[in-house]
Length: 106
Image (cartoon, rainbow, N blue to C red; front, top):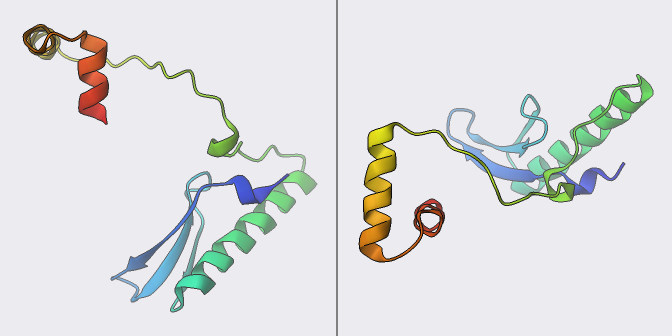
């Protein structure tokens, strides 16, 4: 499995006074380092080791978000008064409800 396809990021942790490397698909894992590049390398190595361990134990690692196919469709439930307000706003702007909500989410 190619662990390079996972979603990684490095951010500064004021609480730890170090950079923290994170992987979206493995929210319980992190890697702290005073060096930004080392934090990135550390989280990638940790994920690689974790995936190898999972495979060795017959577990299925999470699929990388980058490799998933998304339909572009999801359903959101909102209170009726918000639904009504969105329909009114869409009508006032001369666009579909779908186009209005897509623009608001963007």
